[in-house]
Length: 320
Image (cartoon, rainbow, N blue to C red):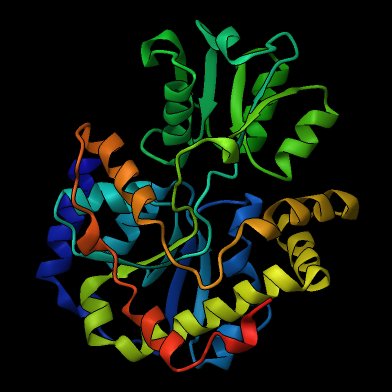
């Protein structure tokens, strides 16, 4: 993955046309966990168009693939967890994190019924989406807090959550990492929730907004309007349960409204307004990836647009 990110970063320097202003933009997100809702509602309520951002929303599974697309120029804005941006940044990629709506892992470790405590995971198979993303990092951080050596478990890339739940049922996996609504569905099927990772000590920037640094510099007005739309969408998530549940049902194709309402109730209190990024979370992520301490990540974070909007009073209508 690192080699591919480096090549695409180099390509973005050679072909600056990918950073040109567009009549239409492409915005990515990484899956169907309930924490993805800020960008969904921003699109579904027409807030991008309100701020004169004409954009297509695309799902790219896995943060490393999203980052490849961003550095390669096929997308302009990404709602993405911190792992792939930090990895690319440590390799010299010219990207920037401008906001972050969620700074905790929203996942839970869900296991087969016979696994009753974290120590029971020793020697077992834990399924994740793919290596190099938030799933793997969350498992590694959990193992560290539980004092379980990495080599004591078998971490297996097993694809989307639906397939991992099937693998749990067939005993192909012993445990996996899920988020609502999948955790709620898994409990209904008889699987055991071992731990909610939001209870871990470590912070982790999850719903970050990332773009190419050159795009921010050359098209700051576009980036600012995008962020305004995102912030208004986030406000709707945090304050308007009815609209948000409707969006959840549409995107997730979920007819069980009670399940979706539980998903909303889990996530809504965890989002941050203003959507500032945890610098400690970025640093912790970088230290895990680089396998050393005191990694400088300050320069990959640029909250100047948020600062401008605060000075202009943009956030005043969005206080709870």
